[in-house]
Image (cartoon, rainbow, N blue to C red; front, top):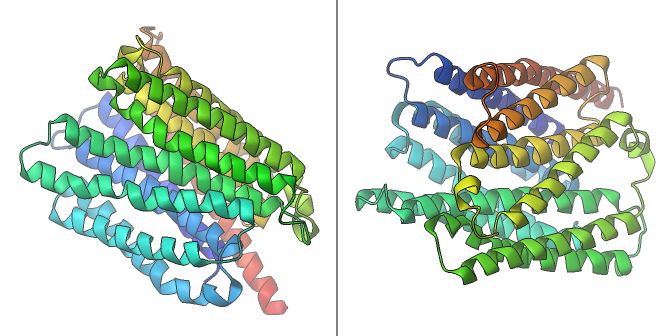
Length: 411
């Protein structure tokens, strides 16, 4: 099983996610009879999480964390995962959370558990990277408890209860604050350790401290998911403490990365390319903004604004489009899975400019500002621009994959 090919599959789903986003935005501009927005939203979010991010992580796990001799055995698991994603993509728009979509979701969850177990047992990660990786895998598996509880709660007539919403927030918290970010940190630590570097130096100790502080913050910030219920003051204190712990852990992580040498050898030129540096800077800026906002959101009195629907969407998109996506694209460039071309640079500029435009509109509306044009129209334009530029990433990666295959044949 080749990581580059898995990356191409992930980008196919990124295109699907972008198109679905544009469809959802258009439905806000021109409502369509019989169009169930909630059902299509489920298809959009599950494809984003499981079709793009999970598949991309699978690709990078093959390249960085799974021993070469074990990669061939991952093909069957990867194929079943794609069947599950396609099944969800086909059934969620029709029935929402129904028997078929839940069955495909459960299938993916089971396969994800197998993947997590195999990755947990792999011994190729550096000590600091392994600590972050295991937090990521634990968050991945435990977050699945949230969706599993939705069926029983719905059967009990509790679909509109706080418990139902808290299960969804539990899943989102485990994914966004755990699985997504800790895996990316593990990948960065793994990719920056040079050949023959010491495994027990100060950089490793800093990385382990980062995993400990951020892991504690991950648990404590779960309290932020309950602030909309107007809990006692001590819950706000726990949520704030979690945010501070994450900031401290981020400081340790930054120090660990600075102490580690850049990866030598064949990836050195790609690692230093302007595209990689720009995407990396964007991801780091988004991550820092996310940490600050998350800590500040625990302050009493901000519940109404923090839990505004558009603010929640903007925050989720900040992590997905402002941290995870640019980080993955940067890593793909370093691996040679994306080629630095003029077309790619233009597409990247359009994609992230459109994402920034969407964020600004969402926050502006939440603050009560009325733009001169329709907010729904502006959001559709931004989504349409992302949907138009995402296929360039796929075509670029497909060309790189084909070129790599030809080079391998020649070799």
